[in-house]
Picture 1: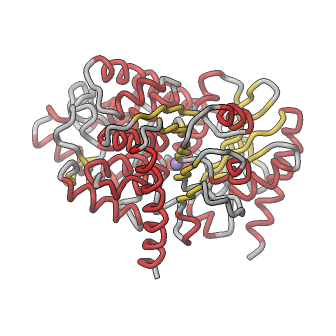
Picture 2: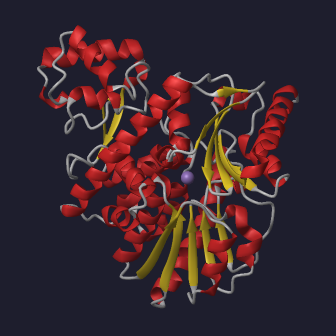
Length: 452
Ligand SMILES: [Mn+2]
C-alpha cells in the first residue's frame, strides 16, 4: 500500500519533470516562486541547480507567503512556465486561471479542486502520504527533477525536511527514499555524534545555547546557564567542542544524554563542503536565517553553491538571527503565554520578535518552556492585521487537534485566511477581531479535542 502510494506520487512527479524538461529544452526561463524558509529555499535550490546543470535559465522569487496580491502580480508576468514550490496547493482555483504551464511542488494541505491539464500538482497529500512527516516542499521539488538523474542534489530535500522539523530520530516515508538517493550519490554521509550546533566552528557554551533541534531543556536559548553547566562539570566552555580533549568530550556526551538522549544520534554531513555548512542541519539553519532576514539573493547564492564572501555574510546574518532567537526565548521564559481553556497564546508588537514568532513558540514547546498540553499560538501585530502562527505536538494531533483546519475555519469567520499542517499552521486576521477570534479558536480546539 505504502509503495503503491509512493509509486503514484513518483508518477505524478515524473509528469512534472517532463513538463519542466520540455520548457528547458525550448529555452524558456523557468519562473520559480518559493517560500522564504529553509524548506522553500532548499526547494528553490534543488530546482535551480538542476536547471543550471541542464543549461537552462530561471528566475526565482522568495515570498513569506502566497496571497492574492502576489498571485495577481505574477499573473501579469510573461512566462511560459511557473513553478510554485513549498506553496501553491492552497491556490489551485486561482492558479487555474493562469495561461502558462504550472508545476506545483508542495506538501501543505491542498485545496479540494481539480485543476486543468496545464497544472501538474505534486503533493504527497493527494496520494495519501503525510506531508508533515514524510515529505517536505524541497522533497516534492526534488521529486520533480529526480528523473533528470539528480541524486547528487537529494540532500537539498533533506535540508528542507530538517527545516520543517520532519526529522525525529530518523527520516520516514518519502524522506527515507530520498535519503537513499543522497547516500548513493556519495555527497551525504551519516555518522553518530553529538547533535550540538556549529560544534566545529562555535565556542562550546554558545553551541549548547544555540542547540534548538533537539532541544536541551535548561540550556537551549540560555548562554549563561550553558556556561555554568559546563563549568560545574569541569568541561572547558570557552573553546570549540572539536578542540576539547577526548575525556572532556566523553564527560559532555554522558551529561548531555542525561538531559536529552536524542542529543547523541545520527549526523548528516557533506564532507566536501565548508566546515560551516558541512553538517546538513547547519546548512539548513543558515538558509533559514538568510530567508527570515529577507536576504533572499544571498540565500539563493548559497543554495547555488557560492561560498567565500557570500558565506561570510550568511554567517553574520545567522549570528544575528541566533541572538534574536535568544531574545525571544528570554521573552517566553520571563512572561510565558496567556492561558485560555484549551489554547495558549503569546502576543507581540516587538519588531524583532514578530518576525520569528513561529520559531520561538516551536522551540518554546519543545524546550518545555511552554505547556505542551495546549496548542500555542503566536500573535504578531502587523499594522491593521495580526499574523498568527500555531504550533502543537504530534501527541495533541493524535488527540484530535488539527491546527490547519482550526485556523482556516476561524480566520474565514473574520474575513481572514489560514491553513498549513495539522501540527503547525498559520493565519492572518484583522487586528480588530483579535479577542473574538481567540475566543472562537479556543472553542474550535475544545471541539476538536472532544469529538472523534
Ligand atoms: Mn515546507
